[in-house]
Length: 401
Image (cartoon, rainbow, N blue to C red; front, side, top):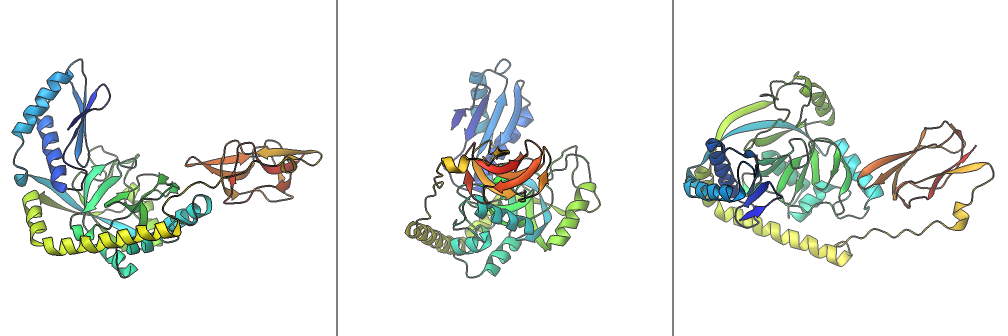
């Protein structure tokens, strides 16, 4: 299917909305054809998992002419079974249930949704929704899997979208609903049947399994960040994790961008014909795994229906009463400038503060907003509580001036 994507792009989509590595190979074949022909007016190509976005200059390459070329390209694509691509096996350190991801879960429970089915342990949730017997099974599968990188830049800065080559390693999950407001940089998560390594700190929704090293190095070329590129991975790389402690990962993350440590990388080739043969030879066990997984997934959803966790709605907040807005003599209010949730209270009653000192940290619209003292004074009252929602204009702290 060809879709207009604004005035200067066409989005080409292949096949139904399913995970099929053969469709990704077809996208790659079309991208390779277009790159080889070096069309005047073709600006860039952005491959997805089953799509290719073609960015063009309509003054140099009119849309009608581009469509003619795309149709010609389809007729000249090689037999997909014969496609093979360079592939690197990239061994990455993984701190299982890293302290940073556990902090993100606690923060989510405090200010977003404390009763979410995936809390307090994302890994227990992954075990349950995939019908696995123990958490050790989740650990074993995560470290046995070889994750094929299908796309880059999913969640900023070279973040890979990858899926296990072996379908029996594809742990399936739902995403956070609502999304997290904070995710640590390079957290490793699973959403749907895909694995992602977050390229930078930010919001997110994939279920955590741990944390790894940097995907992006903006400052320095090293043995792993080469060819003038700040991103680490390439299309069709295969990620394999090995376990490290939180302390070991912390040290590795300090050394890695500086080039003081190097990843183990093996050069190989991914052949679609060999992969299709592997799927055929293991069809029965793959089908059995998927059947067990689907039954567990449906059972989990049924539990949500019974418990009322299937649909989430924000709790209603009532406006502050007149008594709550009244201030003692010689006092001034420090209000919330926007609606949100209280993440941290930094102020302490009866302490002296200066103008500009941080008092409260709000979470709002996936951002942290620090509320500061508007003038010097003494903290007379704190009228908010961590984890509670507040409205715009609501008094957070009372200062005696």
